[in-house]
Length: 201
Image (tube, rainbow, N blue to C red):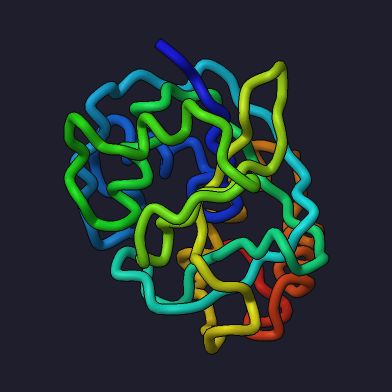
């Protein structure tokens, strides 16, 4: 069973929220129930990761309302992320649920992530989380994330909901031990569309 590092820069930085993609269930404050992965086991390890790119918010989340996070590897910036060591199948199942699909056997993503990505990138489809990016390796295991096929300047930005930001904040506290002031400063550095002075609910 081969593993990859799934790198989250959004709500899946929260272990509980990621758990809903693995075990199934509805995250606190969310409006949708996730079916869960074919393999519900928790990640073997996790670690904080600093990414050399920028995060922005766009679209409208059916789970949280408001914009959701996307990552642009080609635009300079600083993104705080969290990597989880999962199986290739779990990675594929997380990606499927992000695109509102039911995980199933034979998902091509499972095979793709086990081979080096040409140019560090693979577009599996036109969806907003169907572009895979390899952002490095740790212990010779690839660090992979999914994002939109376009960069930060190609779509209108939208304001994330306070509920969505709170889930991101949970992940930042868990992975990095940041307090609310540090989290607020980070959110404000990402986008002018984040309310300044955000505070935990």
